[in-house]
Amino acid sequence: MTRVIITRAEPGQSQTASHVKALGLTPISAPMLHLEPCDVPMPPLEDYGALLLTSANSVRFFSGRTLGTVRDLNLTAYCVGPATLEAARKAGLSDCQHADGNAEDLAALVTAHRTPLQGKLLHIANAAAAGDLAETLRKSGFQVDFLPLYAARPETTPHPEVTACLAAAAPAIVLIHSAKAAEAFAALYTLPPENRHGLVAVSEKAARPLAQAGFAKTTIATRPNETALMACLSSAQTRL
Image 1 (cartoon, one colour):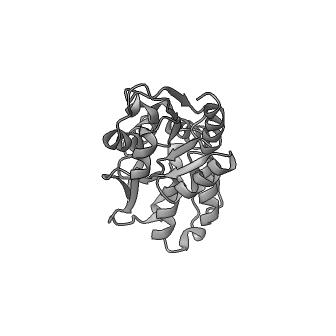
Image 2 (tube, helix red, strand yellow):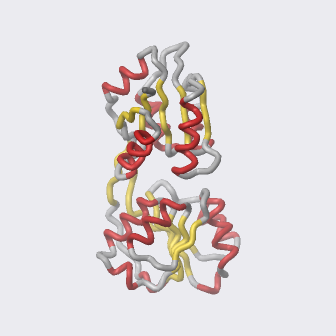
Image 3 (cartoon, one colour):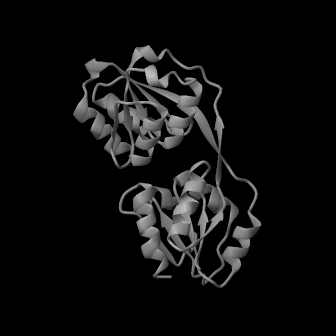
């Protein structure tokens, strides 16, 4: 069976591994990032009209900090995609909407459904995510505060199983969920010349740090979510 190197961090790593197994492929766990909480104060949530959630991990770290009171908040949660939406609902946020895409789609969703007069927005994400989303919304008149509740630290030690897999003649697939994971992978591993390995990425942005890595085939999911990524993986493994 084709081996799939999963670079996603936990807790999503295990979920993706089960999806890979369901496709009849062999998952290799190799998270390129480790998530750590940031020691930042929580602002008064009553000061905000809505939350911007750009990953399921944003929800997990937020619900952990709010100590179960998230169910009592009268806040709309704008989620970047279906996985984030599911996490938000499980956390107890009842008024949730999702963009099924990326940060640009999320900004479009917000501007289509609310006005700046409905209150400030709180963007909860990892420490490296401040930037484009808030800037886009500010140009439309919204007030946006950024709350970095966690940071993604890159793996610094090569995984022996991954090194052996990449050195082997049999084709394997590297699965990429984010540009940060791709950067960490590029820093740790070098593909042999004339390899037959494939790269499957959730988006072109995520694949960009590995553009010059020398993969025999690169395939990009049609939408930046797990469902589309698994469909892309299923298709890509038949062409190796």
